[in-house]
Image 1: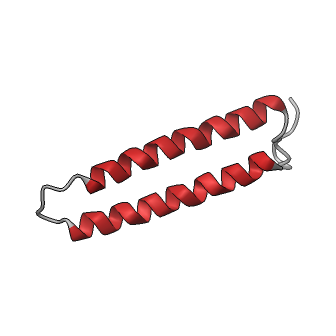
Image 2: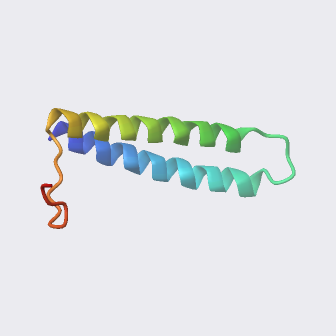
Length: 73
């Protein structure tokens, strides 16, 4: 249960970082500020953490694939 909550929180943090990066991009247009670059770095780090959490959940059996088209072959 905790892993699913962490995954949702990481996804929401990625969306927040994406929107803050857009705001920084529009506000700092023509400026030499690096806030947009830092927001991109934060978003990449959060996305890597999200992928690691999903991989760990699938590998450990906490998360599973229950899609009807994902049959056993």
